[in-house]
Length: 288
Image 1: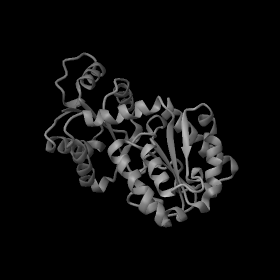
Image 2: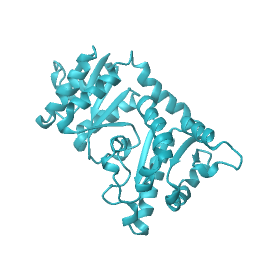
Image 3: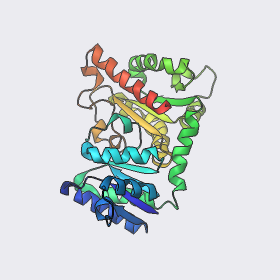
Image 4: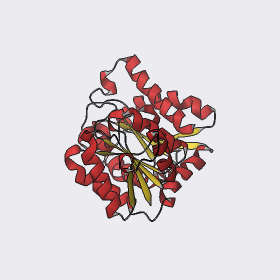
């Protein structure tokens, strides 16, 4: 594959660029970066656009929200190019990409980033990447299922979130699923497994009770994480109360909707409502 790297030309990102290059070359693909192309164009913007058009796959580092990077990413998205988005852990993610799968890395552990990229790039061809966006597009034309994972101790947060998502349900755009939909006499584990499989997005209501739930950790999270890795399922964590979310190796790779330092329990009513509105905006963006 011809892989084009969208990344800031700043020297600060040189180590990231090298990491991406090594991952691409080790996977036996062709690596292209804009500042390394023999520029025969009068306008560098034209050259970059042409390289994006020719690319089979895009790898974009959105750390720092560089304006040129965000423009190039938007251009690639407009062409429906398969894209792998990466960002440094702790970065604030722009709204227009916050609902997408993002690979977060730590600056002092770039070998881990390289390993993850190689794992992705070992796929046979771009069909594996395109398949993800195709599945999501097909799902978005139907009634999309949004799975909510939570601890029953935090049910008050669940009910308020469902109020904010209700307009989408009334329009027939989404089906919000939580275990409150399981009817008496139904096999609850089977129903949960079906909902996990059908959902295109999952909202996680994170608290110490959530992290301590054996059922959630052993039964709900593994298929969600696997689907996020392999199929691009969208994971949206909301930190409800002080907990060790940022220390969890599996969950901390996903950008939380609110800053973990300020969980909902520390907010006043307006602050909480703003977080719920943000989630509703994410879902609205996903549906569109």
